Image 1: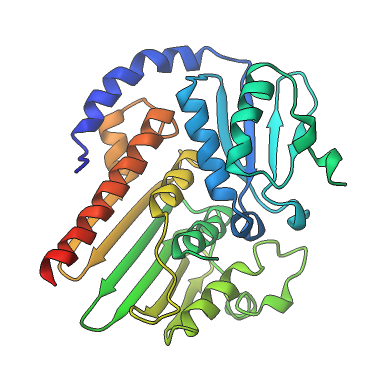
Image 2: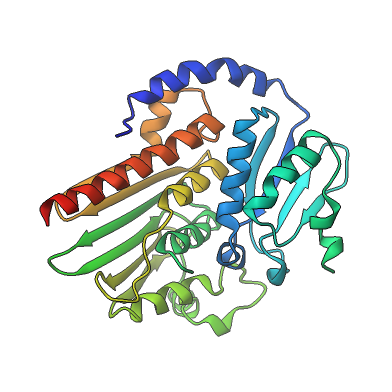
Length: 122
Length: 186
């Protein structure tokens, strides 16, 4: 069973990377809609997939946060990606399976996955 | 909502939007009394008595009172459908406490579900807040408290990916432990 003792080891390991993260000003933000509509549509596994994928790829300049209902409940789960100096990109009806492509093509390589974006739904 | 943990994720958003600094989530199972109790207590802005009444009705939602909506009525209906009950206590300036009770063995009671993801996502998206999650089943209990994590981690933020991964594993393994204790008893 996991215990809190293991945290000390994780702390040591994380300290080095922490400095790396602190010095990044060019942060990328991933924002997941986490209101009743989003959660009911499956936003939690989507958010968990983003956190896991970003951790796996050791992307130290990306943060995942949450927001409320933006009034497009029928298109939930909705994810917004903010790249510094670029316009916000809104993804609709996101599934955990799509997260890998969004991270690799958009967050890592800078080109949005157009077929998943709001333009394809509206 | 197919899982109780999804309701918890949803209802905790109300606490966050109410400006809470401390949010305590409790799951209390009692097999002798056949109850499954979920409570969420916060120290947010709280609500006036008329608001407490209004939020329990899904049809009074207005745009200016954004925190009102379907979250609470859905949860309350789920409890009542399982021979349970729902209680909402709140006071302006003091905070809010929601308590939902299900009959534990009711055929329609949803599973707790992915509580590890719920708690980990709450902490990772709100690293500055204090969360405490407790799960007690009959004689056995465990808790995850971000104050304790912070004491060990020092300057490392609670939304560091390594910490999120740890929280998920910690809760999953403790939930499994609670599960196995029940099997041993029966």
